[in-house]
Length: 105
Image 1 (cartoon, rainbow, N blue to C red):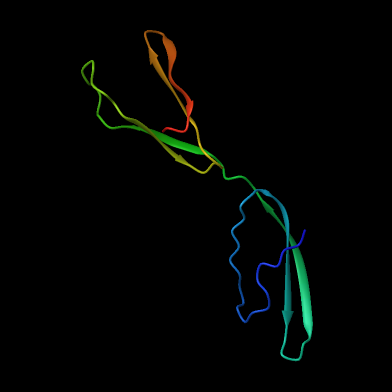
Image 2 (image 1 turned 120 degrees about the vertical axis):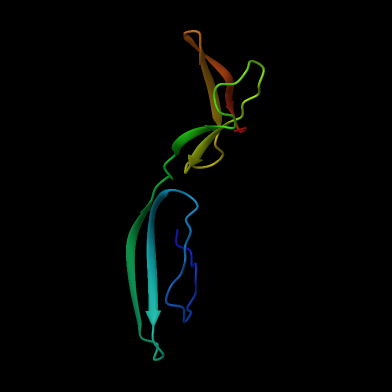
């Protein structure tokens, strides 16, 4: 389905921000003051933003005493929609889930 995103204007450019991934077509009409018009169409692919987990930060340097709360914050970029986080802790030879998937980072 075609949608006009900018009607005839003297502006030479239009800034488009796609909101979903998919295959698009872009069509541009150009006309001069005599009414002569030229048109062109191109295909354009928009992909999902790649999810990247670059590092895990903690608010206190190791080592710490038993009972000291430690805030864990992942450095995340990209992804689409609401991100969910799951946290595991390795101790005494096994992994334990300390927070299952949640919107809370």
